[in-house]
Image (cartoon, rainbow, N blue to C red; front, side):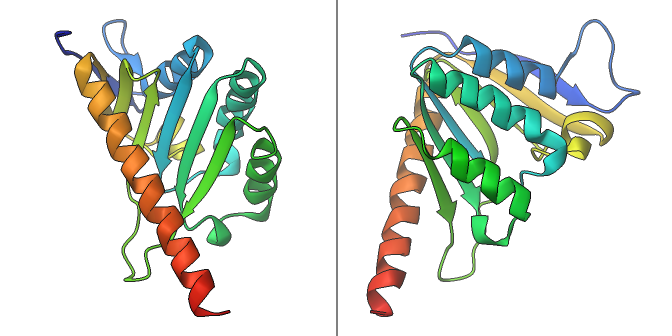
Length: 171
């Protein structure tokens, strides 16, 4: 059993100092270090964080499996939808729109790398969330990352079930 380790992460120009890492830098690092799979669950992805999509594309080209769960993709910026659509063309990438028919939102901000490291925090995948807002997050290492990936796997199944259920009701 692997001991869990927690590291504080922040966003916000006045919070940065040598002993605390930035959320954006750690997210990019985890994507770049991934070898097997990435799980991402997010409420928001904006053009200001397009670099995350670029890093995910590099990971996909390396053969990394990517499960990207986003709240109500259909309501996002057309440029983001197009970029995610292009990313979804890779056979090892699954972009999943989370739309709860009961009105609930996927409000998570999580990235898991190879089920061994995870970032959880308040930051959306946006310029504000990655750079200028004052956000707090944690880098979790150990078996807890596996459990977080399992939760995202379950959310993906729920999202796909709701999509199929909605489709079936209208046909």
